[in-house]
Every structure is written in structure tokens, then in C-alpha cells.
Length: 328
Image (tube, rainbow, N blue to C red; front, side):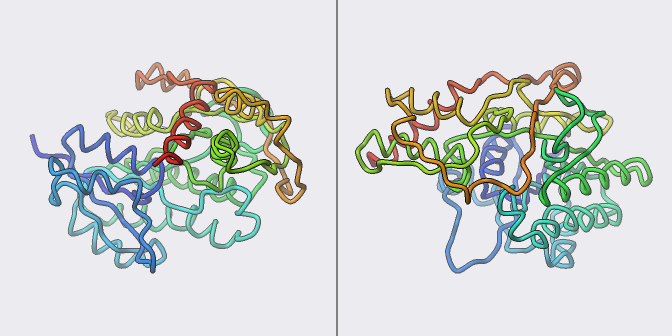
């Protein structure tokens, strides 16, 4: 049996780093696409690159950009991956209102370009598209499943809805093995510091250490279905192991408010968040998604996947990791 070869866009991100760890453990050769920049941003995978048991031949990084699909086409023709995981793109929902063209280009048109490349490869490859619960926006039903109509309320969700629909079209019309994992919010200590959960966990740690006094946030009533990122990386891999391509909801099935996350995070270090959190209107989005709760029944039945880490434990993991980083 030949060694499986994976190509990951967004390999330096939260999900990309956990997925890379998983695939290397499973014996894959992993190729990752990284942008050339004046400053390196590879901290999430540095431990893998330094691991002598991995070796440079099993984890290979390539400079490239999804805005230059000709070079990506050449690269994929050279690598001939068996699996492609498309995780890259502008992933901050609030920011998508400020840079909508970049958001739609990276999260929408890039998927179209990759699907066209796959059509022409002449080599069997399985494609995973990282979709998002934001495609549902303000859904007519809760929890949502794979049949729930799309109703995005922000540029990020609109771009992801476009890309998810494209995967279905190319699957049905051209026989491309294209799948979308419709993932709900998933967090970890590797989450970017501009995301609200990481803002909260860092603030709790810094306030506990006496390095910060207050945390400014927007709408505390917004509810999300929060899971643990390493478990979602496992779901991504399982999606591409089936004989037939399909789309799957990846979620916990539980929703919690930002206030719930605050309570769990600050409570894990014996702090009362009410004494430290202030409201700031600039953090309120022009349009807020509501009642986003995923039904993972299909993933459980067909993939054998189900989440294990719930919100209180997730918040504690993040705060403890931030406390440890402050001690380094």
C-alpha cells in the first residue's frame, strides 16, 4: 500500500496544525502551502518541524498563494496528493465586514480555482472544504443539519455558502470527490488572539496574574456551538475516508452564550468576570448570527465521530495554557 500524501492550505493555522499532527501520526507525507511574508508565522507547527522523527521529507512546506492559482496548479501536479484539505482563508467573521472582497476571494473564489485544478489533474484526489456554521446565519430551525437552507448574514458566511454549494455542484456534475465539513465554532489554546474565546482566556490568565485589569467585549448574549479543535481535525480526516463523498455537520449539539464562556473561563481561576468585563459597542457586529446549533447525528452514524470535550473543560484548557505561557 502506497504512502498517503496530503496537501494542506492553511497549515500554519489552528486547524492546520492539529490536522498535520494527526496525519503524521497516521503515516502520511504532508505538504503545506504557506505565504511568503516579512515575518514568519509558523509557531503552531514549529514543534513538528523540529521533530527528528518527522523529518524534512515527511513535512514539506511550499511558498505559494491562493491568489496565484497557476503556481498552485503546478505544485499539485508535482506533488500529486491523495487528499487536499483546504483550510486557508480569512476566518474572522467580524473582519469580513471590513474586508469583504478579500474574504470572498479567499473563501469563495479560491475554492472554485482548486476545484477546477482537481478536475484537470488526471489523478484521483479527495478534496475537503472547511465550511462553517455561518452559512446558516439566521436559520429557520435549530439545531441545523445538512439539509438546512443557507441564510448567511455576513460576507464570511456568504463566501462559505458559495464554496459549499460549488463543492456539491462539482461532486454531482463532474464526479469530483469534494466534501464540506460544516464546522461550528471550535477553539483551543492555538486559537488566534483576535477571536473572542482567546481574548477571554488570555484576559482571565492575565488578570489572575495581575497583568491586566479589564476586558472590553461586545454582545455577551450571542450563542455558539463550541467544540475542541483537535477533535474537529479528526472529523476532517474521517470525512475523506469514506467511499462516497458527502457533506457533514461537525458540532457538539450544545449552544452556550459568550457569557457562559466568560463564566467558565474566569471561574476556572476563581475570578468573577462581572468585576472585570466592560461593554464596548465597536465589538458589536452589523449583523449577528443567532441560534447556531449543529446536529452531528450524521457524523456520528456514518463517520463514527462524536465530540468529547464540552465548554467548561474547553475554557479551562485554554486558560491553563495561557497561564502556562505567561510563566515561560
